[in-house]
Length: 259
Image (tube, rainbow, N blue to C red; front, side, top):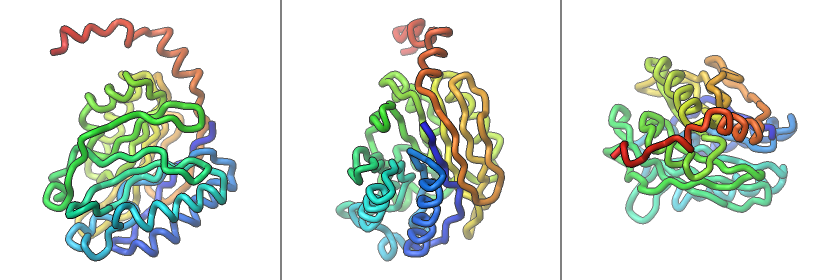
């Protein structure tokens, strides 16, 4: 399975510009044979949180229709990172997945809101994370700060996730944490981790880039630099099964002792 990550800069508060750039990059990834394309966090608006009423999607539109059309046209699955989206009176850091037929098959609202970037002041948190099936594989999807909460990744692994996607706008100042936590999630859950971060900067932060693909043994298969790029890696669900058979962590869990 060929999985592409789009490590890109985000134009702060300019959703039309960001859609245009995302379309260009998804087309390139598809032309290079990608079967699944993954976007970073909050790619439609960036962290222009004080302007959400003006610039945010409403009920995930127009982003969902835009990406559904691209997925169907290019016959590619898209894990759409996350966007700012308004539902009712509240704004969410909202992720969704579109299959190659243009159907939205999964949604997720970021559960853990990051105080250092004022998310809790402007956004409502989600309360549910579930796995989803895509391209014959079971996946989990979390967003940025969620990475610091191993219980969430473990829940998805216990539900069968062979691949954990982490969509992010992770600041460069904590790059060491980013790399270390991603490797830990892969090793402890014996799954692939595909982490797609943004690059560039906004008014308050410089972002790390260094998107990563890590195998179920914790080996780094690919690490991006600090510039925009599209990377493609081959993942094998069979590798996950082999690792979990060789080191039977899930069979040896004793949940009663963890309460």
